[in-house]
Amino acid sequence: MLTDIDWLNSYALFVFDCRCYVAILNQLILAQDKEMQFPLCGDANGYAAFVTSSFLQDASVVVYEGINLLVNQGVSIVDLLACCGKDYYSKLKIVRNNMHLYNKYGSYTNKATEIINTQLREFDMEQKDEYYDLRNDIALIYEITENGKKLLGTNYYLYHNREASFVEWMPMEIIEFAHDTAMLLNAISQVDIFTFLEPPTDVLICDPSQIELFDYKSEELFKSLNLKTTTTFRLILILSSLSYTNQLIKSHFNIDAINKSGEWICFATKWIAIKYDEIMDCINNLLQYITTSEKEIIESYLKKYDVDILNMHLRNTAQSLRNMLHYSGNNYKITKSDTGKIDSNIFLMHASRAGIRTWRGFISVQREMINNINKMEDCFRDIFSSTII
Image 1: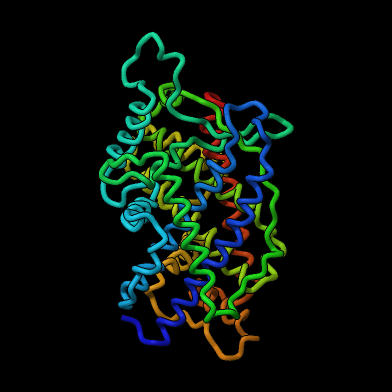
Image 2: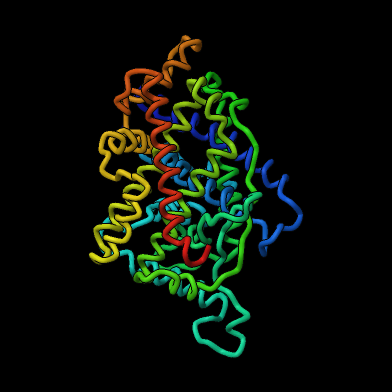
């Protein structure tokens, strides 16, 4: 159990993060309102399905960690969860425990196989019959631009962190879970004892890309590369995660304005670090478990795009910021009676955790992560470029 002052600071950081998530979520809702009534060339509009759904899954991890802080401190969560479905907390734990794009211990094969087979069962495609050619079990996600379309990933990305003990979620359960997560974020963000922790909203923008879903067969996806099915599955997950991260940054972050705000430079850089570190962990784990020939292929693409997965200075900084997800840690020195100092308090606390001494150094790390994410997205998209694009 934390001391009173450590608990207060940890709780303040949790509330602050929830307020930032709510501000971004409001922009995502505006983005959905901007979607065209019908897709330009795909089978369905995909901005909400891809970006908003992925963001809510990120937010659910924050909610879980915050609730864990309350539980560890002996605070009852009954009233907080009263507005949620009866199984919300157990589902929240499932999402939190499945946030990784890889298994920390052992192969990812069983999980990948189950996700693939679940989709095949849902669309009655386990056995080929006379109607097989008319059915599809997955959706390819594309950004539609003036110059054509750009592959972002597949909807497998939306399933990987809802799988636990191979339990299948019904569509209405997914909608209810997203609704409950948004409700909790909003409720927590309105806690009024931290009124000085109000991130400004004028640094956010709403300029969504035209994202569309195209029906597709997983059989064709896995035939497209001369790799094992699990390897292809993990590559498309990595691409999806990279694309989602870039879409949120370019569509909703005014980076220049964010980097002039003490609150937002901390939140945005921490969020980017969480995504960056997760992706780098997944790539390293993938290279550890694939065959020698597959490893040579993927490393050749990484070399082509000058992706340095051994840049430990940046990795260590990203890991330090990512670990701030665990609110039950201590030394989060935020609260002071002098509210005029809160801007620098937030910044100094994040900077000290990341081992950064200056504002310019913080911006430099953030931009280097964004640059690497861009390069990696191009790299992993290129792997599929000669086949399904």
